[in-house]
Length: 250
Image 1 (cartoon, rainbow, N blue to C red):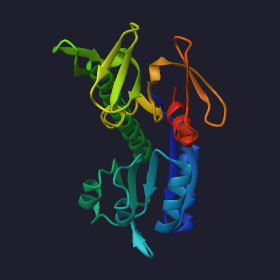
Image 2: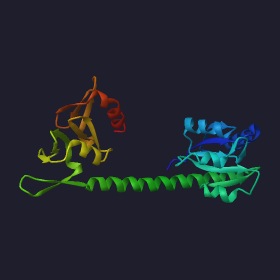
Image 3: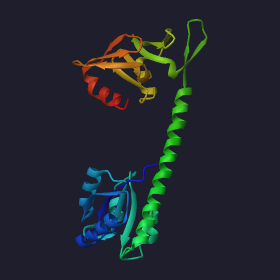
Image 4: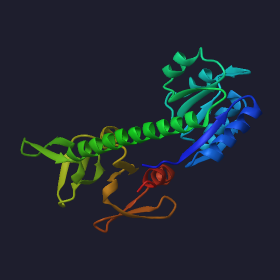
């Protein structure tokens, strides 16, 4: 769990911003004030450029209020604490999932308690996301595709064992990590549309590659993918930029 907080302060009164800067800098550990703003419009720019995990928001400001700012975010990557001289907005504030609602003047004790609440909420969200990622990974490892075989039966192929898929006319050839090939009557476009885009990428009109099967990328006009088995597959020039973006988290 990281206790470090990147903070943005939003208040139309520069004096109030300075007071919060002094309180946070002098009496609170594990924080960095990465930006300040004096209007809703300026706040959007600062939040986008600094990517904070905590925003202290004054509610009433000229040309808009804090709620109008938050309505612009369908999903937020930051926690919110309201700071205001008025208490009539408390209920509405918590409808926007605010961590806390502090009345001016803010006391040091309350501020420290609020930061602790923020850290706990961030930590819980991280645990929830880790659980979701783990379940998703487990599910993807168990997922399969079913294809008809030449004997009238059905072959069950776990996605994790597919190294690549090659277009063959209107059909597709599925290569698996045990060096077997399976012919499917589905087109490569159908596989491109249905497979998990985090695991599989269509590098060329003829090939879809499994991320886990990539050994390295060789630069060029489009470049080449070198696979674990030593084979090289061409990357189409028009797909190069998207492919490198897709590949970068590895």
